[in-house]
Amino acid sequence: MGSLIKKKLFYQTLAFILPFVVFSIFLTSVALSLSNKRFFQKTIHQDYANIIQTASGSISRFLDNSQRSLESLALVMASLKLDPWQKEIALTAFLHQNPQFSAIDLISPQDSIAASPEPADLRQPEQHQDLLDRALSGGTAVSKAMADGNELPYAYVYVPVRRQGKTDELLRARLSLKFIWDILEDIRIGEKGHVYVMDGSGRLIAHRDIQQVLQPAQAITPEDLNAIRKTAGPLEWVGKNDGAFYNLGVYIPGPDWIVMLTQPRSEVYEYLRQNIFWAALMSLLIAMGAVFLGWRGSRRLLAPIQALHLHVQDMGRGDLDRKIAIGRVDEIGDLGNAFNEMTDSLKKYVDREVETARTLAHTKNLATLGTVASKVSHEMGNFLFGIQMMMNGLKKEPLTPNGLGILKTIENEVAQTRTFTKDFMNFAKKPALKFVRRSLDGLIREVLDILRPEADGHEIGVTLNWDPAIPPIRMDTELMKQVFTNLIKNSLEAMNGAGNLTITGKAAGETILVSVADTGPGMDPEISEKLFEPFVSTKGVLGTGLGLAIVKSNIEVHGGTIECVSAPGKGAEFLIRLPME
Image (cartoon, one colour):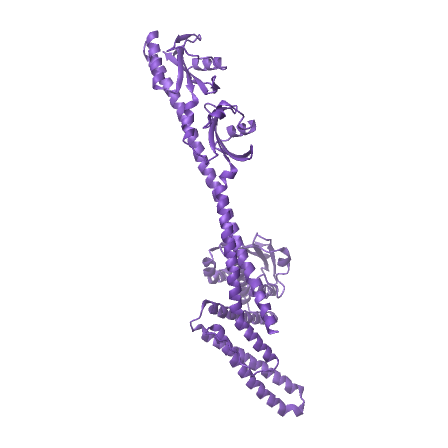
């Protein structure tokens, strides 16, 4: 039988402790993995946004510098009177100094060639007339991206040559966009990621892989193109093209270009998957270690408890001569010695009472037997008091953390029992009322002064909003202090951390309405409806269930009412209505 009980206690202990340990490890692992994932996603977005914005900035600067170079040539030619031969020399020199331009010529407003450094196939783009008109009006015009016979991208730039406020000639140059590849070549996005440039129609202009430009294909959908144009910063989305891809695009409004970053999601999240795998493996190993240590610790912990259990069984069968041998020099060993002393005292007392009972057996007086039972109860109380005194003595001895925890548990149980007894007596007896007239807010402030250190210790803000028009009322000061001490302390304990406690008082006709509201976890309506009934508590074994019942009784003594308004996650509010007279 003893072995069976031992196994039962052993398995119950494991079943109680290990799920909490394993679940805590698992929950911590999941929380860390989710936090790591969110941080990783945020970092990836920020890093890739910086990369693509840097690339788009470099491309914009390339285009701006090229445009400014051509505009500078136009200013030089406008300020000098050059003959046709000198103009061709100037154009040739410009091409040598600016290799990004593959061809250039000087045309008249009537669209005839005025000067050209060498024969070049400067065919007119489709939007030639529109570009010509824009340049004649005094502004620089840039064409859309086009491709030559080798499918290499380029664009035309038209710049007016103005003399005395009039456009006499136009510089027309072909800008090779191949130089953008040098910018893209320096950008590495993993092994499979790319940064590339498209024109407004979605056609590739520049890509690290030249075959992508020579064999153009629609890189993204028109809907995605429009979405990128309408977004001020980089636009992120996940596309599916032979698998899931992470995409980031940014719009360059001047030339109507789009810079894109694309990488397979599997490659983006490979590092994160490895982290999660190792985190899961470590959590599993830690959980297995916790199970093993819990098994070993439970066996060692339950061995002396089993010995105590067997000794109690022997006492129940009337064997008061057997001694318990714990064999440990710690608080559990001291508890075993105290139990032996209690057994000796009980045996002596039982022997004495049995002898007394024999001398009184002839009377067969049930009243005498009741007296004996009362004496036994009294003596048992003395025994428990003796154990309490020994526990107080143990506090002065050096104990292990486990021993201190056991002593703390015993103290809490004793304190809870005394609190329950006191609350029950207060609830059962009718109080002797002593009414005085005083301000209710003054009484509340006194209670807050007492409990404010506890609130400050938990970083709880306390606010009192009181209508100064509320007159003093007749009240029993002690009972009313008990009311608000209970309510405020319950609110502080319910929040169990940072929060806010607000107490509001206002006149409502012939009554005073006082609200005590907290930002705690709240409670279900089923619990709040029965909250003021005796022995109903939200604190589990830590509460007596009489505090709010006493609060309600004290309020009703003053002719008032109290109710609780609460919902899970929305805190709790206690509404008190008291008559002014």
